[in-house]
Length: 194
Picture (cartoon, rainbow, N blue to C red):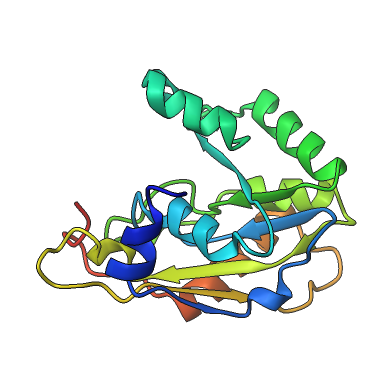
């Protein structure tokens, strides 16, 4: 966070809206849109004064020894993408059951200019830990971080989703959260992310 701080705060001119909605303690799920590799860093930086957000991250990131130390130090949870990774789901449920704050990208991967369908993971977590609060984090501007000399305008908007309808399935919840995130932070045009 110390290394990323100047990039996010100064170069990115970060604006944070609704941070007070993120509870200081207790099980919290933070679904977010995912357009850039910078998204987890920017969201974590935006939330840092209120809460540390652990996150589910693709397991291939642990291949780099330095990055592995950083991810482990931040309490991130590796997940095998494209598979039903029950170990990652169990670790995420354990995090939430102990009052943790867990970030997840319902789309599962970066959008790269495409509208992606929601994956059921966030809904499965919400059903497994029903006492967890859900606070969405819509992030925008991250695809512009590397477009030197043009400076980006980063923004993270924390908001509570609309109330769940009765008997909402895990995939319906994930789709609803994704639609609400994309209403605040639409998919940027392809080719902007480095």
